Length: 299
Ligand code: NAP
Image (cartoon, rainbow, N blue to C red; front, side, top):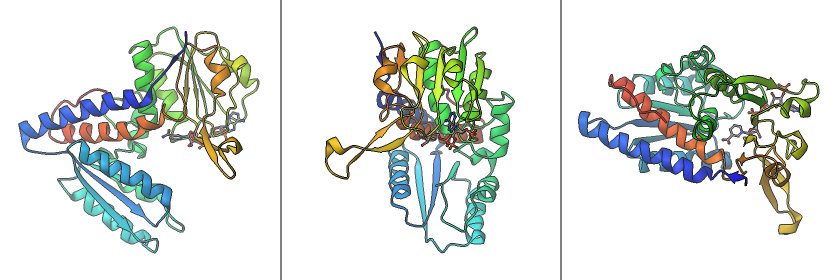
């Protein structure tokens, strides 16, 4: 019997821990975690993401600050705002919504955020800590951190003896995901567009993680019987059955056929997606605990 993971339910349990640890911190120290979110320009999808992040931050009991800047904002103005937030003691987490509108360059901005406030986990210091297995010192990028919550809840903390395949080697997801699986003692293969016999590589995986951006690429006969499948892909495809011009979201995994072979599978939508925002909240409370010299909660 295949279990379809309810990402919303797991995300809600993470948010539950964020809320209780936020209350405990405020009770003990009088300090609320503070999350500052910066959005530049008027891309509607980015505004939707930022609104839900700000709303969730308030729901968690954080001080939530949103900076909405016009598309004409200069690199210097944006850098100056990050600098101000770096110095602001009430701000424990800074998130710059990506992508930035042209010609702004995101990398210098991300690298200018203090690593201990980089709740998106994209600063090279945080990426380096994940790569070297220092998971208690840095902040882990939110989507791989969320995917690891599913892995831990299924297989426990120690993945000794299990083989894991991550399809995709992006800095945002594939590389940190592979490093987290390795740190948990899995035997890890990172596959990508140059991998030979991808189907054969995937068939070895006890834990198969797909983060490619190609709709339903992973087929049922690529899956080892009983495997855990984590589908990170978000792809919008036409859905004429819903009406003219309509679309729907699918993952990188052909859900129906893979669900017949796997023992655990995450759906799209409603799997990894809801975890990303939950882990952003988790990172903010972790950053606040550390700033106050306290042992942060584990997620
Ligand atoms: P990305 O930077 O475009 O990386 C895609 C990776 O897939 C690359 O490493 C690429 O290999 C590999 N790839 C492409 N075609 C392939 C093929 N035919 N066979 C094997 N590997 C192939 O994407 P990303 O940022 O990691 O995101 C991947 C997916 O996850 C996207 O659908 C994205 O929307 C989704 N995502 C979701 C969340 C969320 O749920 N919150 C967060 C992040 C990403 P090369 O390196 O060789 O080119």
